[in-house]
Every structure is written in C-alpha cells, then in structure tokens.
Length: 261
Image (tube, one colour):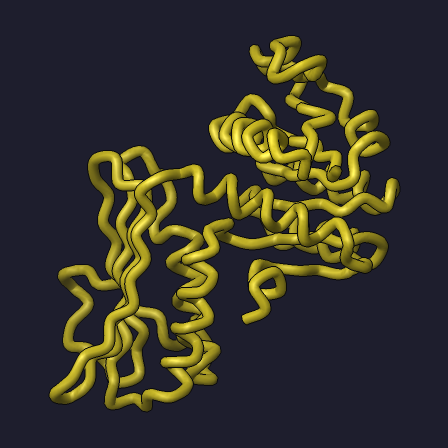
C-alpha cells in the first residue's frame, strides 16, 4: 500500500487525481492520506474521502505520505521541493510554467530525494516525444518538420508546453539548437527555411489536446499524432509516476524513465 498526498487538491487536476486514487485504492494498491490547499482556498475543510479532508497542513502531508503529487503554482511548487528534500520524500511535479529559479529548486531537491518532473503526464505524449526524436535523427533536412497543436479556447499559453517539448525532441534528434530552428507560422513569416522546425497553433472549443508532427519529404510524408479526449489520462499518468518514483533513489526523473524509452 502506497500512501499518497495531493498538493493542490482543490484544483481541477488535483480533484481528478484524488478521484483516480480513490478508484485505484479499491484494489488496495494506493491510499489517499493527505490533501492540501492554500490558506485562501474555498476547498479547505471539505471532505474528499473517508477521514481525509482538504487542509493547509503541508508539513503533515510530507511527514505522513510515501510520495506526494504536486499540481499547484510555480512559487508553491518551489517551496514543496524544499520540503521534499527536507523530509526525503519523493515528489511528482505536474505544475507547469516554472521559472529557471523554480526549476533549479527541483534540481536541488533531487540531490536529496527522488523528483519527477515533466511537461505532460500523458503516457502517449511521452511515447510521442521519444518517437519524434528517433524520427528526426533518422530523417535528414530534405524532410521538413512541422508541428501542429490545438487546445480549448480557455488555454492561455501558446504554443503549449507540450508542443515546445515536441519541438525540443525534434531539435535533439536533429542535433540542432531549438532557438535557431523554431519558426512560428504567421502570415508574415515568408518562404520556408530549410532545416526549420515549424510550429502552428490553434485554439478553439473544448479540445483537450492534439499534437501532430509531420515529416514532409519529397514524395512521402510521415505523420505522428496524439489526441487527448479525456483529461483523466493526466491523472492516471501522475499516479503511475508516483507508484514508480517511491522506490527510486535521489535523482531527477521524467516519464521517459518510467516508460524506459
């Protein structure tokens, strides 16, 4: 039985993760021990399961859990990284938008405990990243690389963090610097540059997430696509990562380690 704590329990992802933990707990694999929110959250005090209520006691969460899952805010995540190091407790981080300093806090914590950090918890997306890197390494510049991503109309960042991760995978496969290769396709961009990694973004409706990578050659085209239709895949991925991470030594890990790709 793995005792799990959820940081950011009142958020959309936090609630979804708790739901998945409770479902998986029916098989006696994992148990929800702590659910934590910020002091000003309206969810503080609400009951989530059995005797577990959402509290603000993050110290108790780190003391009583085997592993913790963080879907909070960047500044809170950095604090939690420090607590993970202090208590020597594994930490799964799904929080996005971290600054360089906040990412460095995760790196520092990983010297003392196991830290998992990824731009996207989807198992399928992480397999896509591995495949994109492999394809980019095998196909030369006669194959133009184009990335398309689409999300719902409420998403504020464009391109998505996942789309940038896909672009980084392509650049790594080609052994080039992403900043020298990435081109955003807007009307004024002009003719396509050989070796460029093109990026197109769409926002609309309730699209959960779509990422498509096209390797367009002369006379043939390879397309790799991932479509998310249910946000529960991110919660399932976070739990899979947590169960894997609890047995790992100190270090910084990603879904590539979990999937061994």
